[in-house]
Amino acid sequence: MSTLEMLTVLGSGVLGGQISWHSAFKGKTVTVYDIDVEALDRCRAAHEQYAAIYLAEVGATDADIATTHDRLTYTIDLADAVSIADLVIEAVPEIPDVKTAVYQKMAGLLPDHTLVASNSSTLLPSSFAQATGRPEKFCALHFGNGIWAMNFVLPSYGRTRHEYVVRYSRLTEMGPGQIVGLFFGQDTPTDGPSCVYNKTVAVNGSSDEPCIGNGCPGPPSL
Ligand SMILES: NC(=O)c1ccc[n+]([C@@H]2O[C@H](COP(=O)([O-])OP(=O)(O)OC[C@H]3O[C@@H](n4cnc5c(N)ncnc54)[C@H](O)[C@@H]3O)[C@@H](O)[C@H]2O)c1
Image (cartoon, rainbow, N blue to C red):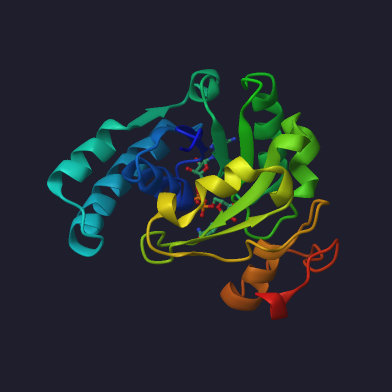
């Protein structure tokens, strides 16, 4: 039985919208936070589009869609958004200063038990760990765009210290799919699998940060 029932997603754009919708579809109670009201409106519209996709392609019923909507809340109030979160997944823009600022702003608002994960594609998770104020409860969970079809997640950084987060991404909770890179990492934190993924598969290449090292075994192990 999972103890990660209350999820907050920071950033309601492309990936935040998908992570929040899919997690609600899989039974989580989800709060979507954004600094921009209009972004939340766009997220609601995207969720309507995902509803149609899940009906057509994922085997959802009308009742599934209704309960998914019921599990979703949208807010621009960060304190409200995280006040009862078991897990916060950050999906704000891939800009280090923006991510650091939101982690710092959130740090004093989180319940003690809350776990925090970054969906960053190219940035090193370790560079944000201290800003969260709880590096021991921080890791990376990198979801794929088109989460209903690209149904995988790359856990990285501190995996072995965050079994609850890994549990969240188990197949039973994420639906059909796979976890790529689950066995990355040793007992010490590792940076890199999502960077490796991006540079070898998605060919993003937008980061100058090293993506191999610090214990990350690199593309062959993917
Ligand atoms: N788009 C992809 O294909 C993809 C795939 C995997 C991972 N990611 C990662 O997901 C993260 C988000 O990417 P995206 O494509 O969804 O971005 P996006 O630009 O679509 O959405 C970002 C959202 O964050 C909001 N935002 C900006 N500043 C904020 C703040 N301080 N607090 C809260 N919300 C804020 C914006 O209003 C916007 O709605 C990035 O780290 C990216 O690397 C993206």
